[in-house]
Structures are given as structure tokens and as C-alpha cells.
Image 1: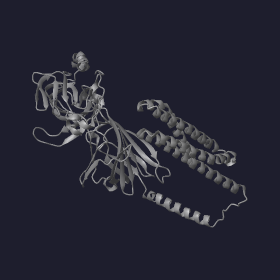
Image 2: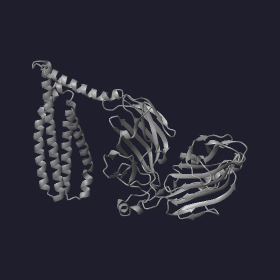
Image 3: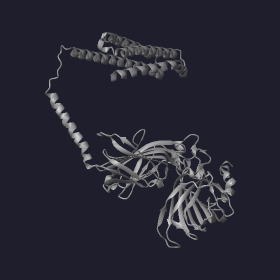
Image 4: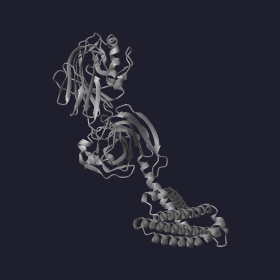
Length: 612
């Protein structure tokens, strides 16, 4: 009922819209075919428009409800030249958003500009491809690992148009599998995996009747919240492409736990709506391909390539269920001569815009074209609207940085993976900049080495700087000795800890006490060695910056000894009293936590001293 209510408001103003119909045109016939086999909805409208008015008409209006228009990723109109059964070439016509006067804000209108005016009695045939994203709503919204994914699609049985429609049909292609329900009409039927409605005849403008289809669709709902493609051009012969994906499964969210055992045993049943591999169709002759995520390189990938195509199949570290996310990066190189050309004195990069991944929706796509340093006069030609900007990127041996053309587009589908062009000026002499810089750098380095070898830079042993250097070296050696003693103390602690483990295994209390006495004696000897070294550092001016940390280290190690002996005594007493293992753990739990905290502080101080 909630789904139907979303369409109910249309019925309130159909009668009002009928009075504002564009009477010059009528649609003689329209056949709509909606493909729901994946999570991207593709609707093909084949319509024949007739001019029944007296004026010449130069445009045809298309209407979409706002709830559909917000998900409209792409729309393309083809004009079929020729008549009757004569087949001719198709011409793409400009299709732009317009706001006709007197129309309600609940509809979004597109205008198709005809190649020539349509006179009275004339007809024109158009094929319109509309591609929608996020139009299949999971219902239920949460499923378990073993459930199939059910989705809901909403549309109208009648073509919503500002013109009268004489004959119309609707076909909805499903992916196969279970169909829970669909809106019934007298002439509606479900055959195999396709629902057909119609034909319907003689409906006025803005006729509308909601259609709801509830069916199973386990196609991978791969959605990239953000994709950043970086195309870096090197005039030394390579185009390097790096793609950063932030991917999510956009289908029904998974509830309950995940069983790896069930998934591996019956993946097609226990994870039908998940996906564990992704297909990338790369340009021919792609090379140096890599695939990694935040952890590192991933070796579970497969690659096939020849002179005509290149295909990469990657497997994430885990199967992706509804609502789950993953981030990864792929990169590959392309031969420069296949994509860079000279046109009218400029360089032209001709390369594809969208993602090479199969059937992925990209909510936000950012394409960064990194040009060589020294490029200027940059412009781009993209076959659809994009936001454009420029920035600077610094890489190795750059002086002023490399210009970067930034193109950004939202709601991107595979049909956007078209070629676009980037034009720029570049002087070939700029290629010599980096080699000359390297040669000059090595030359200056060799000159500096020669000068250094022939210069006496020794320091007198009686000078203040030399004495300060000697004192600093003594301080460093003393700190090293203190670190060694502290490490020996930690080793004694580890042996004492090992005696407790032996006690829990063998129950030999006497051996544990002997280990305690031995450790106590060893620690006393180490403390004796430590005292003169600490005294030296305390009175040395060169150690003023490091003495507080050394003093803190010695104090922490003493505190650690006390806590270690206390825990040892507690455990031995418990064993002598023949207490159970659980009670012993409860008694020493707080002591163990404090001991671990002090040990961490000691390790941090030792690491700090190593860095100094």
C-alpha cells in the first residue's frame, strides 16, 4: 500500500493536464520495452509521432515523473531516416531538459529537437533509450544469507505523455526466476520471463495507471559510491591509468551472521545475491596490471588479453553481500601511440571516460587527466555534460608541477564509457628537462665529492666542539648500555613468567620458587650495574635532554619488577592452597592488566631512546 501511495498524487491532476495537451502532435504508436535483467533499468521507447495540427513542429516533448527523472542517468534519441521497410542509418538527436509553460512541477520534461520541421500530416519515427539507476527497490529491505533477493519496480501501464496516444504496448523483461506479484490488467500476461501489457488504444494525454512488479533479481548490485580515475600521460611512450574504487553492494542488506562454511558448500544457494568476482574490460594491449586494496596486493585475479580485447577478472578478499563495502585500486598501462595523436598542431588524447567494470553504477565519477609538465592550452570535448576544473600535481623531478584536467560526473552507467578528447600544446624540448636535470645533479655531486676529498676539514682535539662531540659519544654509549641492561631485565621477567606457565602445567611449586630466587638475584646484579651509568647521565650536561626519559625508564622497570614478583607470589600461594584455575585467573586479572600496561610503557621508552 505504501508503494501504491507514491503514485496516487498523479491521479489528482490528470484531468487538469488533459486540458493543456499539445494538440499539434499525436503518438500513432509507441512500444515500450523495459529491461530489468540487471540492477540498471533500460527502457527503450519506439514511437511514431504524427503532426495533426496546422503548424510546423520542430520538437517532441518527453515527460517523466520526478521520482523517475532523479534516477535518469542517460537518455538518447535516435531518428530513423527512411520510411516503410527501407532501412537507413540512425541519427542521434539532441535531447535536453526544458520547462514548458503551464506544466506541473511534478513532471520533468525533455525536448527532442527534430532534424527538420514536421509539417502537417507528416510523421517521424524515434527510438528513445532511457537508462535509470537505483530504480529497483529491495523488498524486503533485509534478507539473510540464504534468501534470494526480491525487488520492486514501479512504472505506468500507459505512456505518460503530453500527447494523445492511439496505440501503445508495454513489455517488461525480467531476469528469470520467481515472480511474487505484478499488477494485473485484462490484457496483461506473463510468458516465460516477460510481462506484456496491451495493446491499449486511444488514451488521452497524461494517462497514467500504476504498475508494480515484485520479482526475484539476484544480479550483483555493484555500486561505486566514488570512483577516481587518474590518467597520466608520459611522452616517453606510456599512458598509466589508476582507478580507486569505493564499492558497495546496493541490494537488500544482509541480516544475521555470515557462514563461510555454508557459502563455500552451496554458494549459489547460500549467497545467490552476493558477488565474489568483478569483470573489467580493459582497452587492447593493456599491460603492467595490478590490483590491491588497503592491506596490500591481491593475487586472486585472472587476466586474458590479445590484440583486440583485454579482460581482467578480480576476486575481493571476501564475498560482497547486501550493504557490505570494499575499497580497492587497479592500475594498468597503455601504449601511448594508441591514444595520443596530433591534430592541427595540438596533441589530442582520445580515451574512454567511464569505468571498465561490467554493469556498475558510479554515483560520483572523477576523471583526472595528468598532462606532462609544460603543457598549456588545455581543453576537453566530452559527449555529455560534466563539471570541469584544473589543478596541479607534483611528481618526481617536477619544478612547476603537472597540469591536471579534472572532469566530474554523477550517476554514471556503462553507456557513459564513451571516448572523450583532451587537447593541449606541448613542446618536445620539454622532454629534455628531466634528463638535463639528472645529468646536472650528478655532475654537481661529483664536483662536490672532489672538493670534499681535497679539503682538510678535520677538527682540533683541543677545541670545544671536539670535546663536546666526545662527551656526546660517551652519553650515547652509556644510554646504549642502559638499554642493554633493561633488555636483560626484561629477559629475566620473561623467564619468571615462563616458570608460572610451567607451574600451571606441572604443578611443581618448588621449581617455581627456585626460579623466583634466581630471578631476584639476577635483577639485583643488573641494578648494581645500572646505578653508576644512571649517575653518570644525571651529572652529564650533554645528557640533559635525554636524562628525564632514562630516569623514567629505570623507574618503570623497577615498578615492573614489583608487580611481577607480586603476581608470582599470588600464583604460588594459590597453588599451595590448591585453588582452581578460574579462581587464580580472577585473583591475578587486575595485576596482569597493570603489568601489561607498565610493560608497554617500558617498550615505548626503549623505542623512543632508539630513535634518539
